[in-house]
Image (tube, rainbow, N blue to C red; front, top):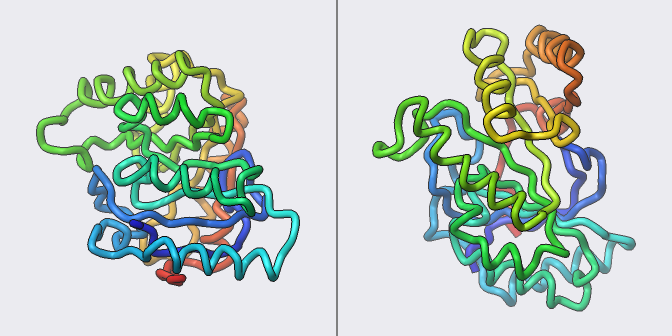
Length: 244
């Protein structure tokens, strides 16, 4: 099973911020973002078997009660053995009534359409579009690539009537950032109630308070929801593997 981290924490960003959750980090990603803060999750040679994962889940449930939320993150959860992971957590007697949040870059939704349809009642998608195409494969470059990669995936989300939310990263130093966010929302006809804006924090640096303030002003001007990133505020850039 391509899972290398199972911990009990709280959701640190997005619409369910603060909700106690089991965080499950899967291995492998179809993108290679230069700014990724969990590059250790790209390695598909890592991962624990189902027995070890199950032991960790039981250990968490023996220590805590009333767990209602699971976060599948990565890496990219839809990249590798997505259905196997979903089947494990939805069939596990301890977890079968939990909501499953899938933290995804949103580029593999169409590819996993049948799986998402099968598990739609259990899933909430947290989609984080990558508006900088430098992280895409070489065959997908330029502004048209962004539209191509996301239009069919967002369309699939709507056709399947999936529960979803979209989180954008805001960088006030990027003169194209605001236009890119607005263009994505307009092109894909996204309701602003399904949008959160997060402030960029550069790898290895403390939280940029000035950019947080600018992000809030951007949200105020446009009616967007601002979301902090609690893990960076509390733990800084000390992103570790915290393996099972």
